[in-house]
Length: 61
Image 1: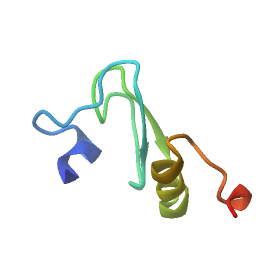
Image 2: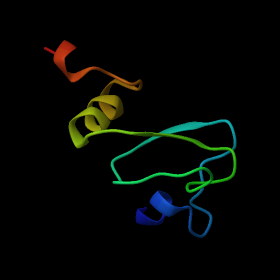
Image 3: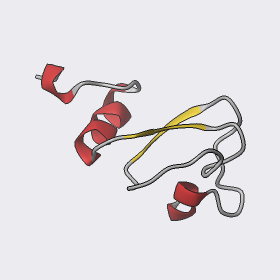
């Protein structure tokens, strides 16, 4: 849900896990204590959702 972008409620990324976010800012602990957040464009985030890994959209056919 939308609350994951700021770690509200139970929508937190577990410590040590990575997520991709299209938000315009990030700081330590924003999405959960110990979470690792990668800021990305919407295209990169969509490509990652389709492939299951961080993907360079220039390499997609």
